[in-house]
Image (cartoon, rainbow, N blue to C red):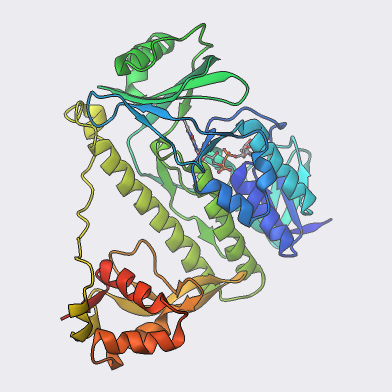
Length: 445
Ligand SMILES: Cc1cc2nc3c(=O)[nH]c(=O)nc-3n(C[C@H](O)[C@H](O)[C@H](O)COP(=O)(O)OP(=O)(O)OC[C@H]3O[C@@H](n4cnc5c(N)ncnc54)[C@H](O)[C@@H]3O)c2cc1C
């Protein structure tokens, strides 16, 4: 019986991209997907980061049929409705087609796809994983759980937000994207490729216990004042949108990716972006573990990058809820909102700074940190500081630690710039100093 290097459960964006990367790295990969594709899926609005990621992976064809995201009517901070132009890189896709294209690319990269086949709870056997899938039991050295909110491999989670449900349906129509608020909801609607319009209302889960779904949905949309016309809306579907993170996203022989690892508040509209990023991080982690690379570095890299993503998104989301003035005292908003942490403002560097002594901020440190280098995770010296979303090992293609080592040997900022100019392309020494100074990492006394 075949023992696969890797078994991936789930053929959404996270599973397909992780499987594809591992197959391209030479591993024998099997992927199990329970649904026939194309299958319907919410989450059609792709954030600006997705097209460049797909380009990087050579998967641009997954965006065939995508349309640029239209301008949006937004009522959020106050009662004013504003027309907001989108980032030109943001697109709207048919998720059924998009997910099918990614899965086809994985197949073309050499992944064996079993579909429609449902995997049930995997178990560790004497020689690796045993995954009951349809009538077979698959065997694999490494397990990737990419089964989304179903989380086929189980384990415990911690909530990152209040229990939230989404009520949604579609109708024939177009028009601008709409984002609006009511006392007990925020609602989002957007035209889809193919002439349908989908609108979603997000509510506290307990509200649904007290009200009939259809009436509640229409009442919530009405409360925003942004959805006046709803010609023959279809049946209203309900899905879970509660935020959580898995308590054990990576082990020596398994990893959870995409929504199996953590979910974002849909307010970010970046679930697919985050699923793709976690798939790429999971692939280098699994490759390092399967190739007997630095195991401790691989485990720490995946855990830390996942935890940073959760923290970044949670802070951003709470601050965004906090910006909604009209309903700030309502329980729905109080449960979700928190002010953004203050961002220190540093005045720009001037010629006067050049003569001054220079040093690294006392909160900054250059410490060994797990980093993906090529296709493997290894330890690299990287700069850490509370103002940085993640440790930094490189600025562009320059290693940062050797540059920072020069700081303590420099009598002044001018002296430091002379040393860096000898090592960096023209103009980069000044740009690097300005960037570090602006973040409060480099200090002139
Ligand atoms: C209401 C709502 C709105 C959203 N809107 C957006 C948005 O506008 N933009 C955005 O980027 N993101 C959005 N998201 C999030 C986005 O849809 C997800 O982040 C993304 O789909 C996660 O991808 P994934 O591959 O992890 O999981 P999924 O896409 O859910 O894929 C998991 C796959 O695993 C399969 N599977 C599950 N169990 C098994 C099993 N036992 N055996 C075999 N196969 C199995 C499933 O059939 C599925 O195909 C939204 C989410 C919600 C809840």
